[in-house]
Image 1 (cartoon, rainbow, N blue to C red):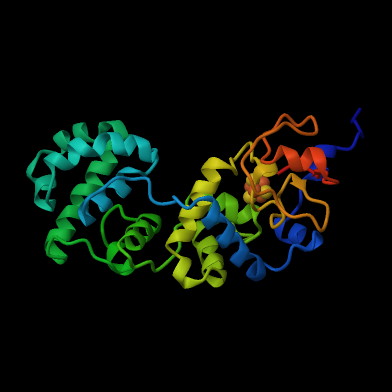
Image 2 (cartoon, rainbow, N blue to C red):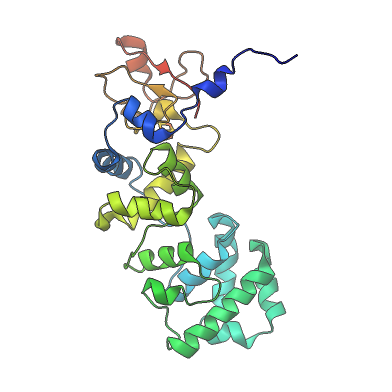
Length: 278
Ligand code: SF4
């Protein structure tokens, strides 16, 4: 016999964060994007690319190596790599097996070797050995997809799109800045609302917020500077309350989660309202 007990957990999940934003009266995404950027910029003033490089070529290679691995892992490999391979010609002067060994620790080393060597060949044949700035040109390099091209263009000071990685995707959806799943469509939605001057730094802000606060499985909504702008927040302020602003920690409400300002919770009329699951 089937159990008719309602699934409370599932019912608590907003069907669409966009409609949830409307239901909570958070305002349109065009209205929220300014404060979102402003608060994230204040919270993560140090947000920047985590890869270490000293030239355009090193940037391009680092970003190519970062596919399917962490920036930390890439940074472990690149000092020795860049000491050995200084120009595009250097990557072609050794047998592929040698380059494979040199980048082995970054994973997918065979495919990455093929892409890097193909890219070096095109750089020499079509771009005088220089890394191009334009997105269409970067996309002609073997193994360089849209995300890599956007990262490189932005870091070289010529952002022509918005980088969409796993953090940017997750946070854009949670903040109801997009309904889309496909990175290209997400980028298009973001381009419509994020001011062009912020195209380069916006992904860094989301990436660092995703790493430090809005974790995929355990978002720390209680201490999040976006809690009153986010339709996915597990906890909301009663209307009229301002957001938390300091960095002390406390336990509250039996949640066992870290929050930012214990004094506000203990002293004032402020109460957290638990409203569901992300
Ligand atoms: S309020 Fe929660 S879900 Fe929304 S951005 Fe902050 S941590 Fe993420």
